[in-house]
Image (cartoon, rainbow, N blue to C red; front, side):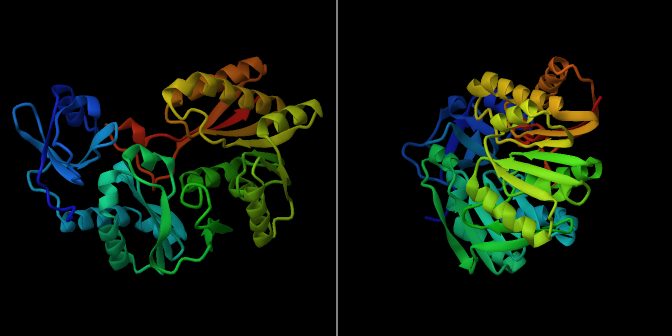
Length: 392
């Protein structure tokens, strides 16, 4: 079935119309008034209650996010339309592509390409198609990326649970060419090995790349990096710190971190396996202190129901970090939980400072790297929060 043939309409409520006009791209199942019976369409026309055309959208019959708007134009999207949009997304990253060997080339809704993620690692690409409609375009997307960028290989990393909400299976495999198990990249002169098949996200936390560079400017003395994963923050700190102690609960991640340390000849970095919550408590009990501490945990709030518990988790690790920092010490603390807003995260940090009997100066308020752009009108595209603070 040709995904570019659009045969059906979906009628939406007045509330959905208002949502679209505010700049949001998603329409939920509860705002669908009428949809085709048993249709397997990748894309549909979207109309209001009077039948007026609102645009075109990816259609996901089994998802609560029923529609993802692609275009508000009268003309239906064509292969040429999608190619032009992908070209534009890549062109916006031309400086990033020139400066380093890894970056996000397409950031889904942020680039008006809902559910489509493309990451570059050296001369290889990783593709994710996270919705039913986007997945139907996978062969076209692979061919287009090959034509535009001439990569050595393209791999799909669709081994994510989000696909099951779309009625899709998790999958992983080579779409074009050859992709080795590991690829070496450079970030601001630091070398990293990326596991293309097993690494977190698509292989690396690209969204923190600019925060790592900024954090390194302030990092001094004895540094502690919690939730280090494969050592990205730790190895940045190694360039400006006397010593770096880094901890993670995953032995596999730490094995790769150790190889990254050796690759960069960073003899002043030590990796320890452990639960960061327990590790911070043990450091406090042993009266250890640090000049720089980085906290980059996984998302504690996967959904709104988990927010209360997540706040407690974020407060605990920040409280313990603040107690471990020397006066004038630097705290680099992040949250990738979308449901915890930036203002709420700052509130948690202030509560932790109060309970630790410390004052903090916010030096920088940061977010995800510029290759993960935030779309106006769509708060879901803003998820990463990062504060760099001085502790007094």
